[in-house]
Image 1: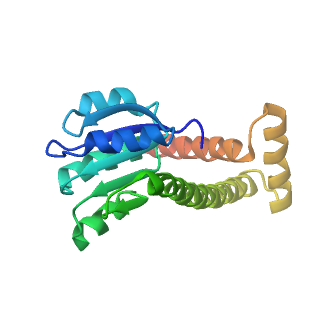
Image 2: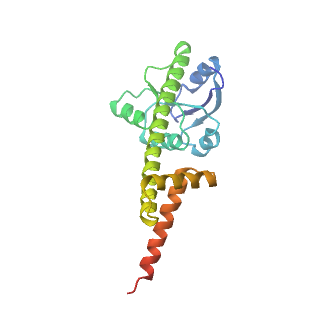
Image 3: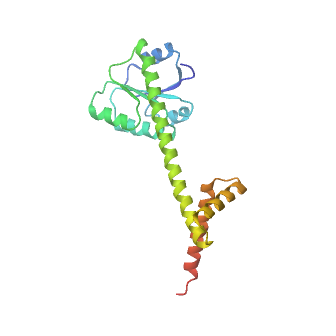
Length: 203
């Protein structure tokens, strides 16, 4: 695997950091930096260059997970966590914030590459689903917006549904915009007009 830039984050009481670093290096992974989880500023300065986040925590603390969650919300990347913490709570919380591989029984030269490769594959599959769901949601929202704009035109211009649709499509083509952009403009204009009418009404 090439161009895998790893940001290694460790906790303050971890004694196996050098061993993990050596194992990653021997597998030709590019370690951007190795940073203590408490040095948040240093982590942030390197995070944008990372394509994979590898963590090594002796005990999985909520504060650590909260910070990792902030990172992956800003920029989603595969997350691998090595730990001695085998509690069900720690596992569940880690998975819930986006950890793709939770490894309890350590690491070695033979296992490190498949662990990271599987984590990346899981991450990519999940992101594909997220992107498809987001796209579907946006399409539904656009359709509702266009339907609302059509209703406005049908009522204000005495058009039928097909005429209203064709008008929105023509305006989109003329202005090199999407139909949803035009529909949003129509809805916004109508809302402004409605507010003005309320403001001008006799009291």
